[in-house]
Length: 292
Ligand SMILES: NC(=O)c1ccc[n+]([C@@H]2O[C@H](COP(=O)([O-])OP(=O)(O)OC[C@H]3O[C@@H](n4cnc5c(N)ncnc54)[C@H](OP(=O)(O)O)[C@@H]3O)[C@@H](O)[C@H]2O)c1
Image 1 (cartoon, helix red, strand yellow):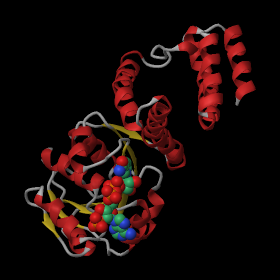
Image 2 (tube, helix red, strand yellow):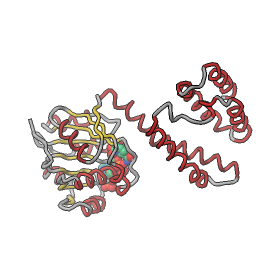
Image 3 (cartoon, protein in one colour):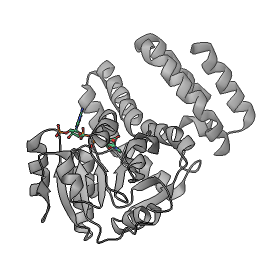
Image 4 (cartoon, helix red, strand yellow):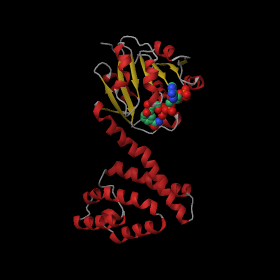
């Protein structure tokens, strides 16, 4: 069985946000990040310029050949084709960072003797600069066989991340929880900010006003968890206030009414966990259902 260690040479195939962030975090933790190749040569050169000892190669094969562990950090759809374009050595590791994809993307490399792995950061990466800062404390899910699992677990610890292990069949549900939190929560912020357009402000002004609240909510959740961090008219059982919301939406922003109703109904059990009595919860539920 191949032994992977902190001395194993690492390459990146795909020089985007996740590849660039992870490579910098690994280099800062003392891992030898020796090679990069990407679809666009300029991306690979920018990547390599950030990391001492890292060379930009013109071909994926060139970068893979000098590595013991190759991360394929292209967009999801390109991972399989890029990995399939390389001839792999026996015992060389090939790892992707996709949350929804499983190891079967690497069936081809595996048939050549390569060791497949998945190492997914449960984080939103908007740039390399922000990404590398956000890695400490981030959960990384690992799907891997015994030959590379301890290495990826140690790697997560070495970059200050929190490793968890997933089975292939659980990955899509795990991934969609992250999409609810990252992608769709961002959409919700845009929607909440958009309500301000009805009250004489821009969406940007609304978002700016709401973000400090979002930060406090995140802090409260981290400190107290769910349901203790649940606050507002629902756990208080303020039926009159909730009715005013529903009326206002019906009159002034009816497009938002179904989303508001579904979110409120989905959250009612948490308000009950927080102390809302069952009778008031039922009253609120029936009222909402007459509006949605
Ligand atoms: N962004 C996130 O928040 C996030 C979070 C967790 C996991 N991930 C995963 O991380 C991986 C990389 O995502 P990313 O956000 O870093 O993407 P990204 O910034 O868009 O970078 C992907 C890179 O892949 C290359 N690429 C795109 N299409 C390609 C193609 N058809 N053939 C070959 N190369 C292609 C591009 O290279 P060139 O620049 O050279 O053209 C690009 O730089 C994905 O598997 C993604 O699911 C992303």
